Length: 195
Image 1 (cartoon, rainbow, N blue to C red):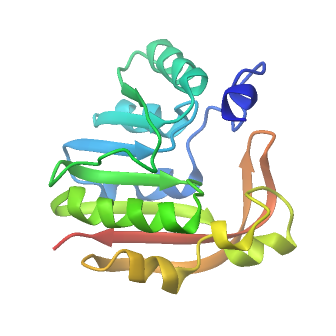
Image 2: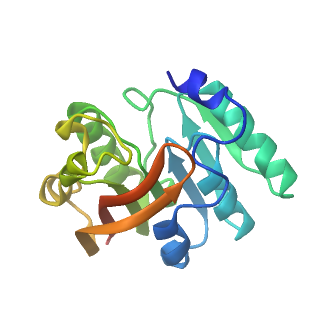
């Protein structure tokens, strides 16, 4: 599905970074940053432009090829890795920051990835998340059609046990991100730090 989506002309979600990431990127400490399910690279490239050492992981080779091209066009470098997040090892105390923008996964995979994030962040490292909330199902402006793949704040906080939450809420906002995420939406936003 993702290779097919990213194989179409243009960029499925545009080339501009996610608004929440743009607003809060400065909260990510200097150092290596991991972008989960980074697709065509708009968020990873944005962070590389700000001096971060970025690794973009996605299951789509096609998407990551476009990410590398976008980075080159903007005069920056990102490391790309084709991987399935269900089995990929995030490492131990490896990242200063981890970014998850619309990385919707089956609940059991999401819980495993979130536990991996807690282990993989360095002390002081930050996890920055924006994903569709369960009430997004009423909007129909993007995201998966199954509630269990959406981000319930309290559930995600439990999955991220060990982090300190600087922000964790669900809000409504206008999302304009290419042809698949456009319109009024319900999103969960989280900024969490490893002590």
